[in-house]
Image 1 (tube, rainbow, N blue to C red):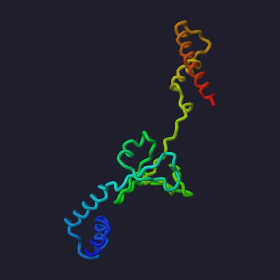
Image 2 (image 1 turned 135 degrees about the vertical axis):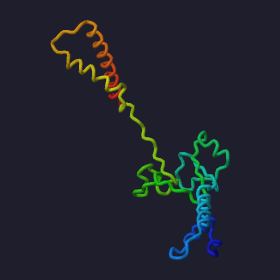
Image 3 (image 1 turned 30 degrees about the vertical axis):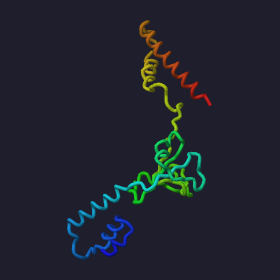
Image 4 (image 1 turned 90 degrees about the horizontal axis):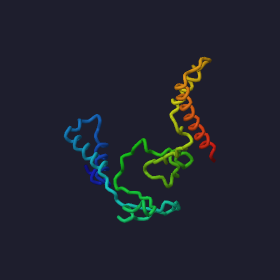
Length: 184
């Protein structure tokens, strides 16, 4: 218990006490293990922000972070600021948000190792509007089947008009799509 009182925080004290349990020795009482588990969970999941810092979105130089007050945090979006929170206690790591550094740069989000925050937040990939079809491709199936089935037998005027109307609609959609794809 002397080591636990010398620890730098309550979390360190709990971890220190758990490390000093001898696996070959007598078992730890269940109520003590339960209390330590709850205390450790409370310490890890109840971390409070020690200090807020901000920087301008365009500022990437060294020492660009400055201490923020409530106005900086509340109006960060309108002022073009990036906000970060600094904690006294360790935060719970999230494996799906960890950075993957290669040559000192994250391969997912592009942040350098020196400036990367605690979580990897990859930017959303912009969707090229030309990659999306302006119509449902299944619409082409029935007119193509009609062309296959047309054969030499003449069809009545009602079917001919409805098929011509559908074909004209598909032709117009394809022409609009082709024009969109040819834009620089």
